[in-house]
Length: 159
Image 1: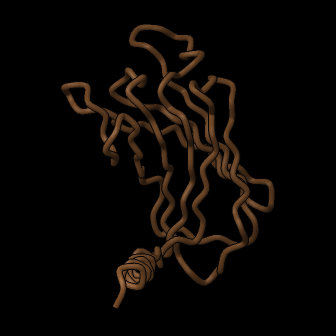
Image 2: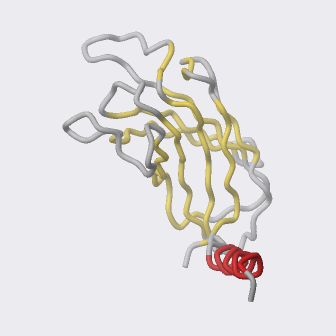
């Protein structure tokens, strides 16, 4: 067997085993080099099977320019009937030594943050995500949140 054929077979095997069977929806949107406090990232979710349950995640890509220990988000889920449920969330983003949490080998890290578990959907929903970081002792929010480059939303089938 030639080296070319061996490489092709290895690639096919890797693709087969790397399939993400739980994923129903997974999308990222860029916020540039800094996430403005008035910038709302919106995701239009597909219509999901109303008989099944799902786990929801907020995914972030960040880099070493992120200088805070935690992250505050305001997440609004808009249902098909117009009702909107709003949550204010806090996530730890760094270790006590200041190194970023998340997966990645370079200065770019990817964090998969649990949002909700065991949820049901009926119809088409929208998700709106906004950053709400404030510096200690200050009321106004951070206008440009450096270091967050992409915001994502993921839905997985519940086991």
